Image (cartoon, rainbow, N blue to C red; front, side):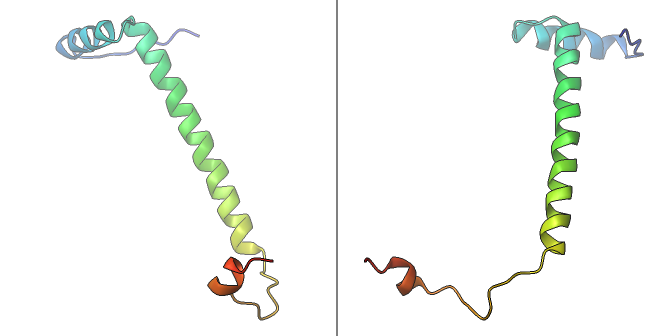
Length: 75
């Protein structure tokens, strides 16, 4: 897919220099950034779903509480 962007010429020149310093073209740098942006959104959606699931799941500890001594006791 081709995308057309409107960017100030000074910003585009600075971005080209920054991309070149990373060994990339400006086009590749923009593609990489868009991929990272898409992955970050997907990750946030997954984290939100996990949190909702965890909050909706009742605990079944039946009165048990964490006991450091018991956890460190050796058989």
